[in-house]
Amino acid sequence: MPLTSIVTALPSASRSRPRSDPTPHAARAVEQAAVAEVNAFVDWLAALPLSAWLEVGRAISGNREQIAARGLAWEFLQDAIAEHDLQVAAWFVRDAVETAAFLASHSVRRWSPGERRVFAAAHGGAEAAALSLLGRSFLHAAHLTSLYGMFGDRRAAPTSLAQGTEAVVRTG
Image (cartoon, rainbow, N blue to C red):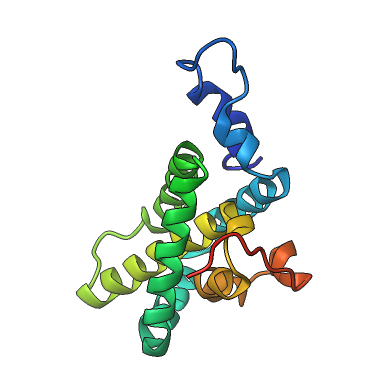
């Protein structure tokens, strides 16, 4: 049973929209393939043991060379989410990642400061990875790789990376 289904969640968020537009704008903007990849990724995250989250967190924390690239990619992703009216979809993605992180960490009674930092890095990385899949059509391949990479190295690459495609919507 999947943890989340972003596609089915989106229409309920549009109930306050005028009746002349029954399909939410965000649902039209998000490709079905991207939504399916986000759902599969979040389900995969939910099944990860805490040790795997901590391993990813250590990899993210220890990769100082990628901080600037990840920061730039994050800015492009946030801009794409705003420009393409994906805020509602992004909210659902963040909520699903939060749930997956809770499932991995809820059994920990006491965190050491180091474990807390490492898990926070993994949690942030998971959010960035999931959101990059949501907005992948609007990101350069290098930005998608920067944001998804730490998790993608442990999981099959999304279709757009596997095929080597690159969406060029923005320049900058």
